[in-house]
Image 1: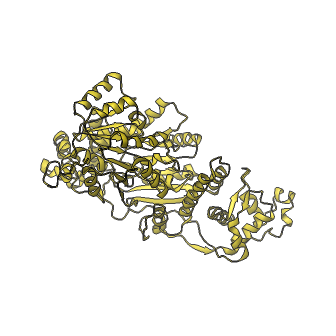
Image 2: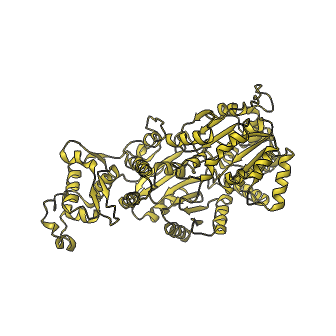
Image 3: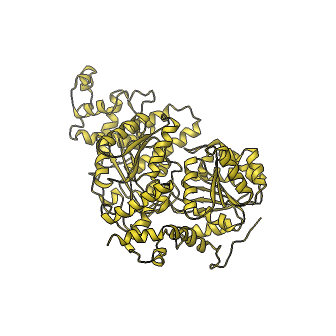
Amino acid sequence: MSHPAPTDPTSAAAPEALLARVFGYQHFRGRQREIIEAVAAGDNALVLMPTGGGKSLCYQIPALMRPGTGIVVSPLIALMRDQVEALKANGVAAAVLNSSLAAQERRQVEQDLLAGRIELLYIAPEGLLREPILNLLGRCRLALFAIDEAHCVSQWGHDFRPEYLQLGALRERFPDVPRIALTATADERTRTEISRHLLPDGGQTFIASFDRPNIRYRVGLKNNPRAQLLSFIDREHRGHSGIVYCFSRKRAEQTAAFLYQNGLTALPYHAGLSADERQAHQDRFIGEDGMIICATIAFGMGIDKPDVRFVAHLDLPRSIEAYYQETGRAGRDGLPADAWMVYSLADIVQIRQMQANSSAPEAQQRLERERLEALLAYCEHAGCRRPPLLSYFDEEHPGQCGHCDNCLNPPETWDATEAARKGLSCVYRTGQRFGAGHVIDVLMGNATERVTALGHDRLSTFAIGSDLDRSTWQSVLRQLLALGHLQPDPAGHGGLQLSERCRALLRGDEQLELRRDAVPVRRKRAAGSRVEVDTDSPDWQALRQWRLETAQEQGVPPYVIFHDATLAAILDARPQSLDELARITGVGQHKLDKYGGDVLNVLAGLD
């Protein structure tokens, strides 16, 4: 079963040599080398590594080290195509085998596979499990099976793909071929599912840090959300690529139109569009600089675009796992990026109502409630964002990261015990049938027509909260709902009800500290960020223009030529020769041979 990896670090097939010669990097990150050595030696592996952490190298390099073809199981055609183009740009013989190929192209790939001319082959799970494909692979020498997006195997996850459950058959069919299962996000339950279904015969588990230090996390409250989004983009990300997540198809359409009307290149993406429209919008996002996609959760998995500078949420995601995975699509190149979100009390009510009306089994409903509560705790947290985010993935963080919103602008907290009791009492006295607006009117002593018609101006809770303003009461009720002391009317009428959790607070057995809603601040550069570049400078624009024209000539996305991080390093170093250019991260031998002269010519023209 085992094909021992070369131990001589100077060998052309050694991990470091392949890393430098093929991919243009001088050093492995984190546990990459450990993983590569294990898989190259023939062991199975489960790899949990954040988006942008370098998962693909963990199977691409072992596939190049071992005899035969590496088979990569990937759930999306777009992901396969992007990775194959990137590999070809690095001089690697890679191909796809999926439904997008014409009959003649398919035959050519199969012939190349049988002849041993393909080093990495990408295929969808449903295609791989067809008997003709399994028979074809049985006639080839295989280096490994890499199962990407492995969390799709879990019925508890948010990207469940039933075809993944059948991939356990690879063990019986190809017992001597190592398997590596990779995912960017998986809680303990999902990890167990991956191991049980994909690696039942065991294997090493590698869990990298889920911290993305280049991403700055920011959470705020809705107040004209589209205008807030436009202000954020105008102030910090004009001309940058980004993804805006919206709760509904309609919201995605409206947001894209609003941004377009305000001079930004923006397109919608959701399941209501035709397949051709979705593909066209996705292709433009991948192939163009400065494109913004306004999408539902139907967009993003497998998008291998490294220079997404921001991910924005105009509505609350359904879970902290979904939030982590979606925000992880920003800053894959390691340069500073933003995860920006605004939400409201209405968002919390809407999602809690959907959960209350769910027909899923009770265990699934309980899990979804726990995931939402973890996200709400993260949103309302008054300290550093990283500890509550990373603790969900069983990782400790000391806090004080220095570049999340709470570290840069620490929110005030206050003893809200008495205010919370007044709010809860008012919800109870008004019959647990009314929404926040009406409850606040009663608390503040606003004798509106509705308040007086219902006789709520004669309740003992009328005007007991007149010492606080409306925005403060909205904050109190929102946080009580987030903390689970209040719950929405499951009938979906928008009313608030008391939960069992509020009893200790009402009895006086519990004190409550709440955060005061923070005032937004201007962005500061993340600590430890990489080479800084003036994106408005003519030199930067000249390099990007060369990259764009080169990419258009070759029919590939610009980042396949060079990532932004590599262009920034080139501009910073100003190499005078091919030898100097070769020392820059991201410039491998194939790209040096192909583009080195052009890059030096562009740089010479900048002087």
